[in-house]
Image (cartoon, rainbow, N blue to C red; front, side, top):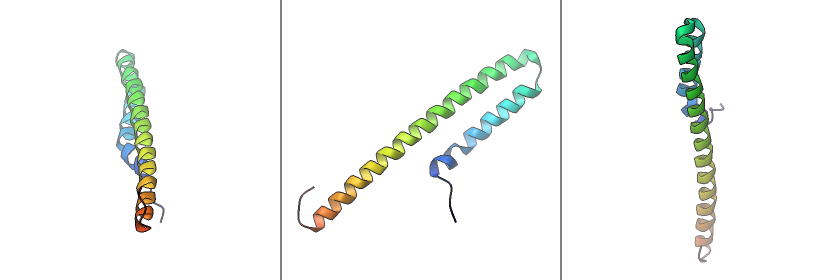
Length: 81
């Protein structure tokens, strides 16, 4: 069975929070609507930052994993990394 990407699982609570904020902004009166919209925008920015940082970390770990794998392969052939 395909499991979801770890980053997708990590951002699910944040996405749920943003959706709740959007729903709250739609159902409340105009006086609180502006404040809610501001929170939704801030939440979206934070979600984008978290996703971007997650992708960057994931790519860095993949690169390092390849480097370590290569080093282990070379070590088994008695050569240096």
